[in-house]
Amino acid sequence: MKVYCNCCGKEIQFKENTQIALEDYVVIDKSWGYFSSKDGIRQKMNICESCFDAWVQTFAAAPVKEQEHELL
Image 1 (cartoon, rainbow, N blue to C red):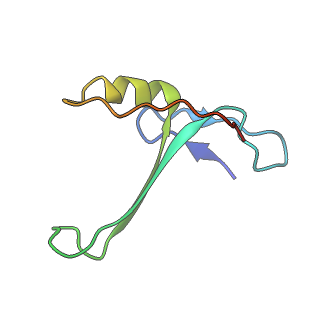
Image 2: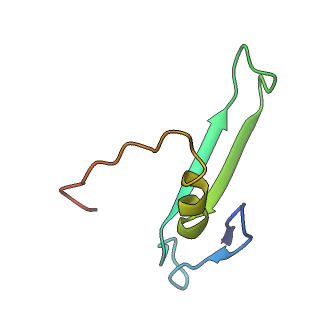
Image 3: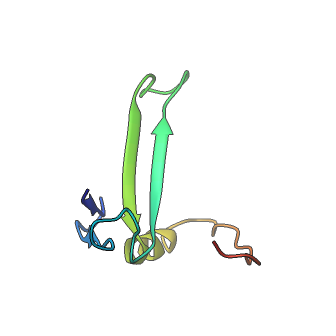
C-alpha cells in the first residue's frame, strides 16, 4: 500500500511489509450531505505534516491545540 500527500505528492514512508507509518500525516475523510453542492460525494485525502503546517498558517483562526498526556 502506497500513501501520498495530496498537496505535495510526497510518498508517506511505511515500515517494510507493514501498515505502520514511519512519519505522521493527516487523513481527511468527508462524506458530503444535504445542503452541499457535493451531496452524496465522499472525498478522502492525506496531508503530510509539512503541508499541514503550511496550510494551517493560511487559516484566519488557528486550530485549537491541546497537549496529549498519553501517546499511543
